[in-house]
Length: 420
Image (cartoon, rainbow, N blue to C red; front, side, top):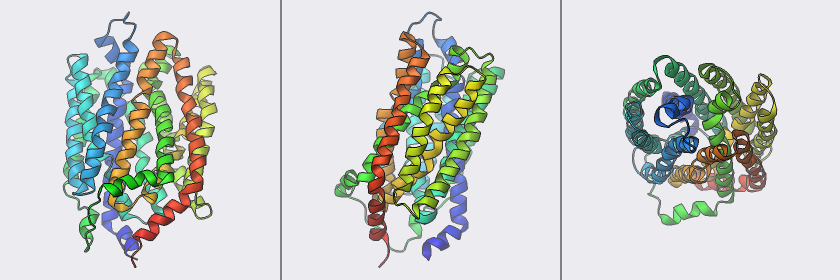
């Protein structure tokens, strides 16, 4: 009864709206870099530099390394202190660092600013979904998480379109200058919010190391992390290089037009897939305890052949394959992240998300952008995309395997957290 009252309150709706806005700006900022990558490469590297693509790929990896290393620290803090205050700090840091990217005079200065963007996002990433887990009951968590994570494709698309349009009109530095402004406004709004944990009369004890180590003994959690790692390896590399691949390698004219079309495709297909995946996961979970994983697996296994089709079809037909590849790649976002909340105890839930962030980036998209760049420098971009896309198959098979454990793990946590 209490969960329904909280859900109906204005607090839950305001929290969802603010967190959605934060996630939107977060991913908009990330993909500005991809949209203006050809301009950055032209400014900082000689045309005959044989490692230019690999070096530019490290700009994305530098952000991810700092993001994944500091996420566990902020996850631990989020389990103990106000998550809104921690997020306000993080959003302010990433906003200032993003603006600083526009002022970078050298490649190394740009690399440093991307590192600080990662630190700022690490303070936000582990805390945000746990607030929604506190505010909404388990039977609605899939669709609520889907709305929250729908900001990933939409924000990414806005990053491509905003970065491409502003970069072409005013130069590659201006998108970075401008994106810091909404971030600072949202950071201020975070300070006006109240953490749901402060509403509880009986404060929960702090978690100890036994509680944290217990995460590794939850089969569906560990399998989910491995599957998301494979998925992130694939989608991280492909999304970082997609505009450059279409513009430079496939020789489609006008970078601004390429980023606009790719951005629209990402927004429409990604938004639709994320919401449908979350809705379908909730609906099927009533009949099948492993539904969240089965929905995720199906999306990845279907995305793979469309990704291969993208590499071989001529344009404009390749745009159709790109649309469906993106659609099915995003199908798992809501269900997979909902599963983390459902199988982990509230005491360590922020840290569970933080550990997931660390692993999926350390072994996922921290590796794939420079790997694709290195393969492209030696062979070509098609070979790089094909090698990385094989991880989609691995993700799908892992989620199929994990489906057998998901129901029991969710039930165990539900029994532990049910009053009485």
